[in-house]
Image (cartoon, rainbow, N blue to C red; front, top):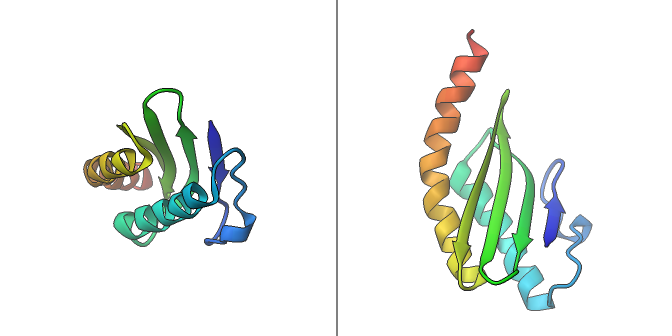
Length: 106
């Protein structure tokens, strides 16, 4: 499993991804950028995990205000897992927005 922690801003040089090829590392960096664009402003990306034991699993943790969310995509390859992650992010982003509003005003 590869875990990429993200604090503030996107800095490819600070991301450590052991045991992946340069091509996979480059693609995973693009996955992080893509997810950030898809989720939109105000979302803080926290961490992405990559598990390649059999099926590839990409697990993204992120936050909007006081609400945390983790979304995952699964597939036969990193590209397929990324596509599944994108589909699920759209659905989960709506729920995260509702939870963040609820927590902000309760």
